Length: 366
Image (tube, rainbow, N blue to C red):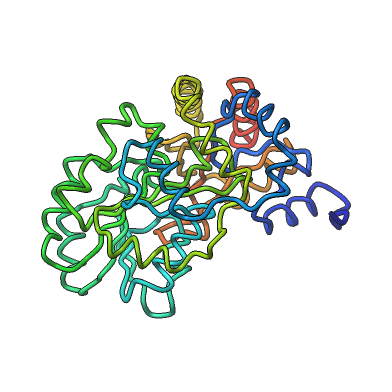
């Protein structure tokens, strides 16, 4: 990799803020990207090392076998699953090629709108300042707009707020018979209080128009492996998505990870519990800071509003990096009122979170 062209920390910030990864190469604390620091265990890397020749030299399996591997993990039938090179590949296929009109509550993960052709995405503003989704208003807007795809990210990014399962079931009921696929993105579901009771995966037989999306990068800590999947009882939708992926869209390391994962289920559950413990402590510490309104998180990150009397979110983000070598995300690029007042902070280890809070306090107190 060429040496980046920055001479001081201010220039480094400008460089980093224009990147979409590779942060580990640049020696700063990353409270921006959202992943599980406690998984996978070292034993998984040992397995990779022991098989590295086979994994590099041989073709990986294709979609049918990949779907069977994910199905074994989530206890679902493989014909209901499509596996992507990260959820981003599947979003691109659905938003960019299958959906004629897609409706997305905002603020949310930008890729659902960005991947759609011009004029095909409709944004539905969340209630402010709560950022809660009113599913009755959302359903009415979907039906009125004749959207054939609608999206709910739960817990949402950047707000870290989950939509109650009862609300999602009501939304699915209201959309029944309206020829609309309801995408429920559960990429952060493993960090809610009770994931199994919160997930909508058990509803796909009752509501064939539900499509569960899951990026595995976040919960499983494997951003570099790029694995995501979708799950639905609508087999024609699965076939349409699979036609959009190329034959070897998942590499051998990602395939091997799927094969190993069922053996580490207990380790995974423990890792998520530790993430939630660290997140809850971070949330508590952030609420003690003057100058921030802090939203109670359901995911592995915390959403905050910077008070109007303090620095803007972009200014705060830059100061934190330049003065403390810590990178968080501001929400200026999100579709929301006063977007330049909001920040998103990923939970890391207890020690790192403490240093972050101290850095924020030193800036907000000035």
